Amino acid sequence: MKKTIIFILLLMQGITLVAEESNISIIPKPNSIQLSKGFFEFNENTKLYLSNDLAELKTVSSFFSELFTKSSGIKFHETDKKPANNYVGLIIDHTLEADYYELSVKSNRIIIRANNPKGIFWGIQSLRQLLPVEVESSSMRTDVKWTVPNVEVKDQPRFGYRGLMLDVARYFYSVDEIKKLIDIMALYKLNNFHWHLTDDQGWRIEIKKYPLLTEVGSWRRETLVGKFPKGTSEKERKYDCIPHAGFYTQEQIKEVIEYADKRFITVIPEIEMPGHATAALASYPEYGCTGGPYQVATKWGVHNDVFCPKETTFEFLENILQEVIDLFPGKYIHIGGDECPKVRWKNCVHCQNLIKSKELADEKELQSYFIGRISSFLESKGRKMIGWDEILEGGLAKGATVMSWRGTEGGISAAMLGNDVIMTPRQYCYFDYYQSKDKSEPLAIGGFVPVDKVYNYNPIPKELPVKFSKHIIGVQANLWTEFIADFDKVQYMLLPRLLAMAEVQWTCEENKNYTDFLLRAEQHKKRLDILELNYARHIFE
Ligand code: ACM
Ligand code: ZN
Image: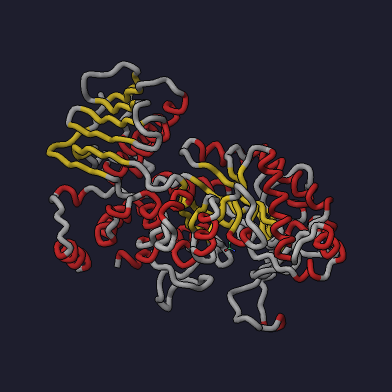
């Protein structure tokens, strides 16, 4: 029924789909797809030809062989000599643009061509999506013909930064679950995993110099149950009486980074400051304004106890960041910067003296001073700072990249100042918001971000003068987890919205069409089923 309506809509929109083209369901939609008659069929003699002995290219070819062999049982013979026919060729071609790839399927061979192994990897994701959905199966399928339609794909992303953030502070997820998330990102060509590692309710990264951060900060006594309206008294609130704990050792973090790296995904750590610091202060109370005692937060919201900008606090934070820098090789370090209440600073002798001695106007400028110092530290180590859009308050640090979350205004202001911006406005990119108004929908934080709203988001604001649009370097979906206690629900909140987000991140505006997306998503539903992922069904009903 629904499919018939969609088809009629497509006809009404004047989109002429060749019968076979409807079988092509690549998400995110490539720039250009030319379909022709015929197909390539894999068999026991199909070879994998590598044009180059780069280690990274071998990693990419192994990714494809592992994926294909486990489901088809067909083992490739790898060669560095170009076979006459019946092969998949992975060809590095330095004349091509850095992010561009081509995928050419003819009856006698498949060729993926790109400037570098990263482009080849994206070509493989497209090839994967042209193969029967059973390629996702974790066991051998003998009932499938392993064919790919003859096609020429020419493709490159719209945005260089295509992100997903997961909050592991409110609830902890295992290394295996994080890897599963990275696998989903790779399938849809996302390339930045933003790992929100610290917050009021938990500190989740081992720091060798400060063991109490995990001994004390990685567990909370209990957790508030459900949601209560603002103003509900403490007496009326319910807690679950169940301790919640977890952190990643530095070894586990390296394992995740390496896993992501093989999928051309950069891991960006977020260490929150000066606000959202209760778990850190519970561990080391001397870095707060009052000296504590503090306890790891057991309820959500914005907490008043924040880092006090003492010299010893900067030393503490820089030592932490140094270990973070040593672990994470990517250029970006995220330092939070959002939702920092000023009440403690207003009542702290040290903070008030600092405002006077630095000739700052107020606590907003004190926040800017705080962030500026951390930014300079990161720059001195050759890294770039990312912060939420509150880092604009009191003056934006030069060279800082802004994540615009409260809307698009922060992003617009930052871009016009010449700073880079990652768009993640909550109205379109917050996957902790409801995706349906069904009464039966599982508890979410609020809001309403259905799949079509995500899909139709254009990250380049109309209000932004064109000459600044180059500063919008990308888009990101954020998954805060106050109401997401397990990984099953993480998947439910992500899928299928992440597929829509992937298209916002990758596909040029001219090629986006929600009705066409829905048809392709229908095919991906089968893929998600075989991958045993949990997803919301609203767009498939
Ligand atoms: C945020 O949602 N507080 C960045
Ligand atoms: Zn203070």
